[in-house]
Each structure stands twice: as structure tokens, then as C-alpha cells.
Amino acid sequence: MKRLRVRRGLAIGLLLMAWESLSRVGWLDPFYLPPPSTVGAVLISLFADGAIWTHLAATCTAAFAGLAGGLLVGVMLGFAAALSPLVADLLEPVMILLNAVPRVILAPLFVIWLGIGLSSKVALALVLVAVLIFFAVYNGIKEVDRRLVERVLTLGGERRHLVREVYVPSVTAWVMGTLKVAVGFAFTGAVVGEFVASSRGLGYLLQFAQSSYNAGLTIALIVIIMAFVLVLFALAEWLERRLLRWRQG
Amino acid sequence: MLHIRGLVMGYGGEPVLSGCDLDVEAGEFVSLIGPSGSGKTSVLRAITGLTRPQHGTVDIDIAAHEIGYLFQDDALLPWRTTLENVALGLRIRGVTRGAAEDTAARWLARLGLERFGNRYPRQLSGGQRKRVAIAQVLALQPKLLLMDEPFSSLDAIVRMRITEELLEWVEREHLTVLLITHDLEEAISLSDVVYVLSQGPRATIRSKHAIEIARPRHVLDSRGDPRFGPLLRLLWSELS
Image (tube, rainbow over all chains, first blue to last red; front, side, top):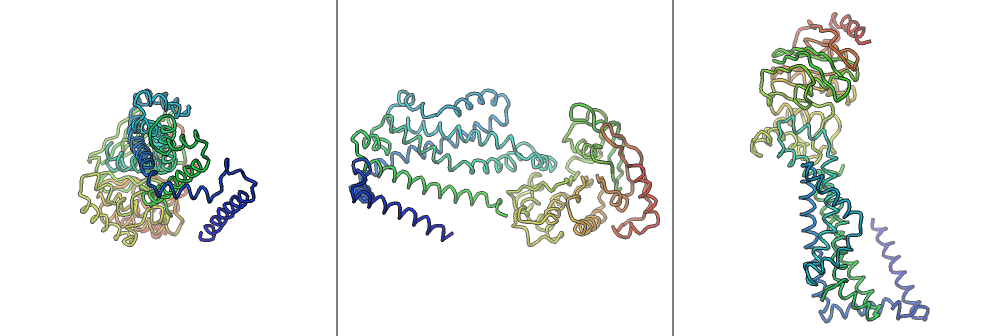
């Protein structure tokens, strides 16, 4: 484990060194690909003057609100569809359609409906996450272990016991399995939403960096978003290990 | 205690079981043997209401909550600890968590699992899981115990030991038992009455045999009884 980390660190270090040296000898045009030292300087200045924080806060707020809302909506609709055939018949076609298209195409519509503020970004992140979670929950319940259902029934259990003892834990396992993807989706929704129309956020900064042909700022922003998502992945993994302790042999 | 008349069971299409009459009186140990696919499990599913019969009646003169059902596989909740699994039936019946877990801990201790209360099913051996499943059912103090080939997945030594233990509990708690098995020796050595099912589909009860060996039984001792050999040959000829 430790050896793996050392090797990975070494690989990244070598890549950065090669990139830096190629820039210094003039083989890479800094206009298109500024060296790591320049990107580093941009990163430092972004945090030093504090301008980045409002943007970071805006993107995170949109992503987390979308993630929370998407989880809530996805779990509720998934349960409703799994437990009621009528709801399933009504929801399934819509969800299959939403799942088939790249859902970010809804971004302009949300801007028209909700304006360029926070709510249109939250809405986009929410839709991205909710569809994913809906299928995790819906399939999770449909594929629940029948033996466990019958075990609870023959111990005298009713529907509420089935939900608490069998359905909720099975679904938790499914949802935890997709949580990392959901975190990625939430950030995609927030950033793309900002990209389309906004006055703050990392997506807005990216849009600004692109329109001013500022490759250094663009790369710095990409690095910030990557670092953020990696931290969240680690958190999701920790949560998964904690909640699914029973899976360890 | 349990009277089944003209039971027909099927899952769409041709019935697996057609025409089963069976009686279990209070305090009796009854076995139902038959080849695979003769609908043995269907009989238990009809008794517990998991599957509705196509025809026939099941009369039980005790309440549904006085029936304990030991599955073929242990069917423990993988996300609950051993203690929580044993307490599950009691919790479903409205016993508070504390009281249910106290009772569960006592049953675990009786079955020699007191050190495993905090483990998850995945962390136990097959024999240990089976003991947990037994504790889960016995903790509800059933009057009628239904068992569906409960020991078929265990190796011979563990199987012998657990059967002996269970037999002790049956005697101590005066349990009435209906055992489904395809193991003739097991059926003869444990039961007062053995019913034989014919090959399915459309299986029927072929015969009924009273086993006159005195109780309490011991798994090994019954096999040494002079009546054991002839009975075994008779049942074998009926099954083949």
C-alpha cells in the first residue's frame, strides 16, 4: 500500500518535472501549455487575494444542494416506483428517457425558468443525481433477496418491518455503491450550469478564463476542481466502509 | 395440531403437489420425505401462508405466531449482527430492544455462541450460522417447529452435533415438529411418524409409517435399534 503510494507520487512528480523542463527549453508554448510553476503561481495568487473563495463557495453550495436534493428525490421516487406498480408505470418511461439523453442539455432551460442564480445550478445537479439514484433504488428493491423477505414475513413481519429490516439496508448498499458517481455528477451539474450562465462559481471562472485565452487560469481551475472531487471521493469511500461494515469478511 | 386435506400446490402450470393429506398431533415429531421436485417445501409454504394453495385446506389450531420456521438456508440478515438477528423476531413482535437483546443473548449462550454476538453472518462458519438461525426461531418459543432440510448444507460431523442439540431442545420445550428431508436415516432416527411423497410433478402421499422407537431419541442410538434396518429398506423401496 505504502509502496503503491510512493510509486504513484513518483509518477506524478516525474510528469511535472518533464513538463516543466520541456517548457523551459522552449519545446512547449506557454501560451497553450504554461509550465507547472506558472500554474502554481496562479493557484497561489487565487487563494492569496481570496477572490477564489466566493466562487468555490458558490460551486460547492450548488453541488451539495443538488446532491442532497437528488438523493432525496431519487430515493423517494425509487421507493414509490418499486412499491407501487402504478407509480412505476408512470415514472419509468420518463426516467429511461432522462437516463438516455445527456441531461446537461437541460441547462439552458433551467436558466430560462430559474434565472442565472444558484437555483438553476442546483436544479441541474439535482436532475443529474436524482435519475442515477432512482435507478439504484428501484433496481435495488426489485432485486432484493427473496429469502430475506420471506424470513421477515415468517417471523411475523409486516410491510413496515420489511421496509426497515430488508429494503432500506439493501437499498443503502446500492446507493452507497453509486455515491461516488453521484458526487461527480453533482459537480458536473454545478460547473456546467455555471458555464452556461452565471455571475460566480468555478464554472463561471472557467468560462472567463477560456474567453480571455488564459490557459494558466484554466489549468489552475481544473486542478482545484480535481482536488475537490478527490477529497469528496475519499469521504464517500470512508462513509461506504463505515455503513457497509457487514460486507467485510 | 395441524391437519392438511387435499392440498394441491403449483406455481402456474402443472401442480407440483396434487393431493396431500397430513396430520401432526401435539408433541409429535413428523417427517415428510420425498425425492427432489416432489413439492416438499410447498407444503411448508402453504402452512406458513407464503404461497396460497390451489386447492385443499390447512387447519392449524395454534396462532400463526406460535409457528417457527427453520429454512433450508439460514437466511440471516447480512447487515445485522448475530445478536440483532436472534432478536429480530422478538423486535417484530413489539418487544423493546433491550429486552429482546437480553433474551437473544441468553439463546446465543445456550447454543454456545455467546462470544459471537457482535459478529456479522459473513464472519461466521456454516455451522455457526445455522445455530444462529436455530436461536432466532427458538427465541420466539414456538409450539410447532417447521424445518425444511435444515442441515443439508452442513458437513457430517457438524450436522450430527447440531441435530443432537436440536433434539434436546425439542424434548425440553415439548416442541411439535414437522421436518422436511430427503435423508431417510435422519427421518427414521428422529420421527414418530414418516410420510413418503411420490415423485413429482403431481406428487401425492404414498404412505405413512409409525416409528415405534421410544423417545427421547439419540441420533446414534436409534440407528442401532433392530427396527431401524427393515424400516430403512422399506422406505427406500417406496422411494425408488
